[in-house]
Image (cartoon, rainbow, N blue to C red; front, side):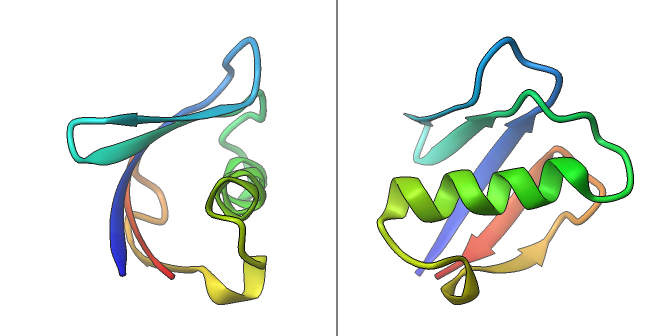
Length: 70
């Protein structure tokens, strides 16, 4: 299944919420050297109740709009 994710970095707290047929992931990490992406993977895995290894980034490695597959 594919899911559209909007990522907001430098947020006050880490959270995942539904919006407009996709998800919004807020992370306290900065978008440097993949730190934010790693945190997004962990937050999504927790939210989707699955392991990180079962989540794959399909599109948007350096964008705030991403598509994940799980």
